[in-house]
Amino acid sequence: MGGLGVGLAGAAIVLISWAPSAEQHAPEPGSTAARVRRQVIFTAIGAGMAFGAFLTLLAQTSSSEGLWPLVSARAITVAGHLALALLTRQTLRLARPALWIALAGGALDLCANALYLLATRAALISLVGTITSLYPATTVLLASLVLRERIQPRQGFGLLCAAAALLLITKTP
Image 1 (cartoon, helix red, strand yellow):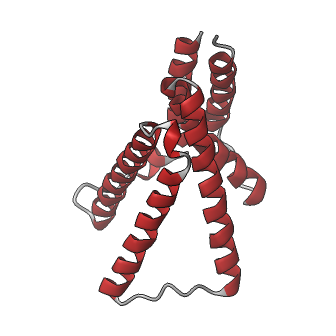
Image 2 (cartoon, rainbow, N blue to C red):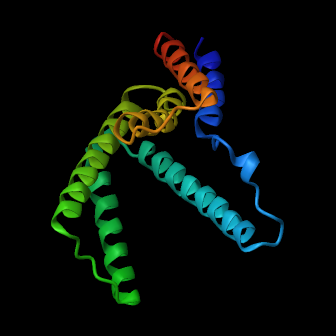
């Protein structure tokens, strides 16, 4: 049943992530909008590959290292942002409301990474990775609840597929 769940999860990710009306708003080939769209697509692919590489490398750490891989990753991220800010002469100062949101987001991200790390050490990475890849479902649900965005029928079906995938994967012995 786990294999069926993994396949269903893949379908769910595509359905949930599909832009609601992208086919109606396709830019003219060669236009500025088309170049921006290509840049966004390449940026998204690059970010996805980096995210996947990070999670794959994190899963390769041993239990004896505890949570230190997360401390190292966070230190590298902070150093990278500081270096980029210095090179581009940008400030890292945030307004107070934005600072609290950024701190809360960082804390939640660190907790999610810690739970992922612990899960990969306790279960098959193929199952943990598949469940982790369903995060677009959370994004769509939060956008619906917080921003009052309308869930498109395609996304709703994707959410149902994601729920079924989770049931199939977690019921796998």
